[in-house]
Length: 249
Image (cartoon, rainbow, N blue to C red):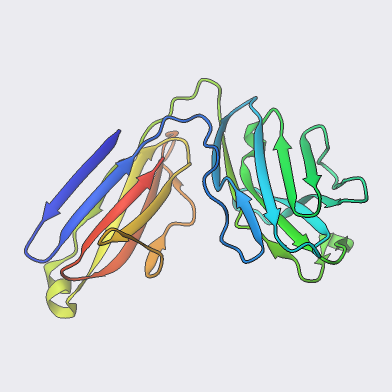
């Protein structure tokens, strides 16, 4: 389902596009853009009790040590396990092979399978590689050398009967005073009323994705006692171009 809103004025043409996919599982969503580590999918949505596979590829064979990390929302990184081809996988306390099953083919490819996912498994997972061992010291101080990370995979977990609610989208127009004084305009895009907290929002200028000069909330905001969420993004634009706020949920 697509929602298309176009607002025309004497200075700007603004387009807002929302794309809602009713997928319970988003499979391959592209690989990371790191120089050595590629990880996919970028995002994945699962219902409680399902299984998810996260893949990692590193193209530098000297990086003999590979690691998987978990980062719950608003928390730091937690090491799940370290993998070396000639040794048994080493799991950290609180993580087990029965839950986080990790395979590694040769030196370059690893897959972590998370079984029977629950709400507690909702997190961003990172693959990393190093040519040195990783040691965990007192108070979980991590010391390593040349540790290279992938871009991460965000896992969202919803209930077996939860209903997916698409976002409502609005773009707030800039003030005439700002346009006249600066010949620029600040646009605000608001996505609201969506569930789950699993939204990719991005701006485009003249059809090309914009990566600089964009400020987007780091985390979605829950709407009071409701189950739905909201997310805000803003960008400053030049007069005369066509900008769009696009969302994938």
